[in-house]
Amino acid sequence: MDVNFEYYKIFYYVARYKNFTKAAQALGSSQPNVTRAMNCLEQQINSTLFVRNNRGIQLTPEGEKLYIRVTAAMTQLMAAEEELADSASLSHGSISIGASETALNIFLLDKLKAFHMVNPGIRLKIYNHSTPEAIDAVKNGLVDFAVVSSPVYADSSLKTVVLHSFQEILVGGTTFTALGSQELSIRELTDYPLICLGRETMTFRFYKDLFMSHGVELEPDTEAATTDQILPLVKCELGLAFLPETMAQESIDKKEIVKISLKDNIPKRNICLVYDSRHPVSSAARKLRKTIGEINYGEN
Image (cartoon, rainbow, N blue to C red; front, side, top):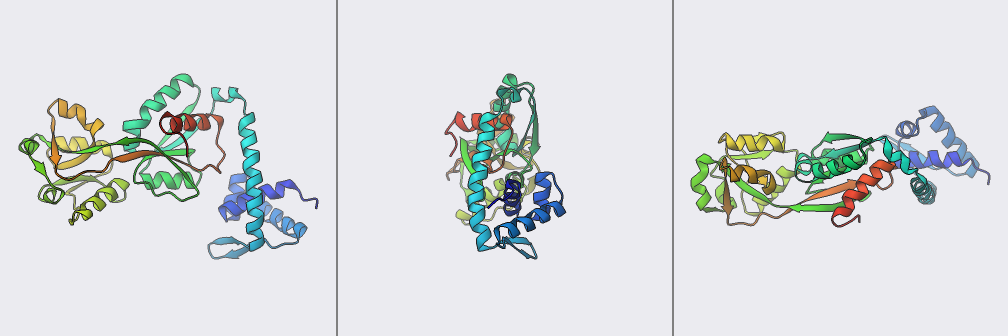
């Protein structure tokens, strides 16, 4: 059967995105051209591959079988292209990264600095996302990969690699100095004003679940848009807040804020790398991702 290989490539993107328009955008083509190619493919292999529905398209059983085979072939071809990529490509290009603010501040910045010193010609595009936003950006191919703070709820189609663990502590302004010599329970925290990140963040979800496990609701008095806003709010005596210990330590040492001990354990959180192994990326992005992933536990 003499089928134009380009049809299989187009089929791969249509089946992956389950949408002719998105496939056309990924291929740098037009929707009519993609539709025409798929009609030709179906005619040449004498099989119906797609069924249209309200949400786009759905693969038929024959389409599912073909997609499994074509995906395997495309994966091998993309891997071959990556292996053949000239190392000179690391002298230019760009990398797009979705990063949660906590992950950027306590982990990623140092790694980006080291990478940039070795590869000064590579442009870095850092997008400030919440963890859910960063994962969606990876899923939709808007960034090369993401570095985010847990909890991470990513589709099974995405790879998640734990890079670094960190501990958060409870802190307050100097008006709460007396609490520094006490131990509070999670339940007792509801008696004090609390500062937390917004409800759309994984940090809020983490603490909401923690408070619920102790039988109380998390109802912050102040919600901050970013992690960087929390420390100034604490210093201005607006309430108590949980912060990564590394971010709070300097202010504690300067006696600008106080650390407050807890009777209850605060589970450690993780900084995670999230990427789509099916999505082709530049040699530079691949090198940075691999470097970040191998610093600690390596890629899964």
